[in-house]
Length: 295
Image 1 (tube, rainbow, N blue to C red):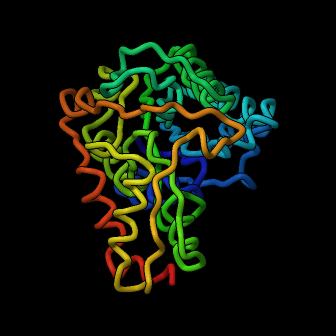
Image 2: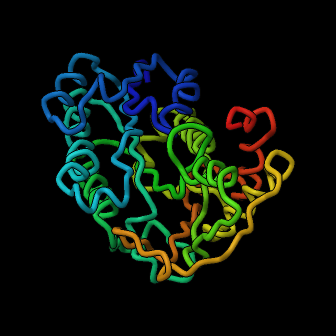
């Protein structure tokens, strides 16, 4: 993989991928100024100019609630753009890595979703991400689609940073306790991607497909918050009082799946890659040397 095009270099996963992919090839990392994902001509012209051997698409429209009022833009970025990238990859004889989401499922299961389960997204965001999966698959190229969930890190906009901000501002936090999933650190996603790609081009081609890539275990948003607060107990005093909330008490524009834990057994069986438990990863992410930048 002599030349790697990384799309979305400033996103949570993209930022981490810049370091991880650097050991695998010559990385050309671009942001929205380098490629307008809502403009098909911009996508095609950029890829044709760079002529990568591998495209890693870490960019997405991720504003889940806003997507309900901007379905066309969300579809252009999440659904159409990945397909154009894949079509251009085919013309170049290139391969592609693309990231998707647990929100392609409706949450009616009570055990972790596998890659064989049939998607049924509830939200515009979930529907556009599923469209992106289908578009990549339809291009007829070697691809890896990694479905992940509840992504967080110490940059960008995410649940962890929102809770840290609110914990400093409020005496009480009311957090949903009846949606279940697996919080996954963006750095772990990038490192797992690197482990898979580091196995070489041939395994990539032979094992092309969809893989779940999430932290092990599961929790609720309330449980996620509890561990976040435990990790900053010495930095924020007093800690806010944490109150469990039902989804019905906190209505949002976009419906969420009540259960969206993904099984990453296939990733481990095929590539020998497994992520740590979500709470262990969170504690590592919130190491004092890391977390002090948030205060």
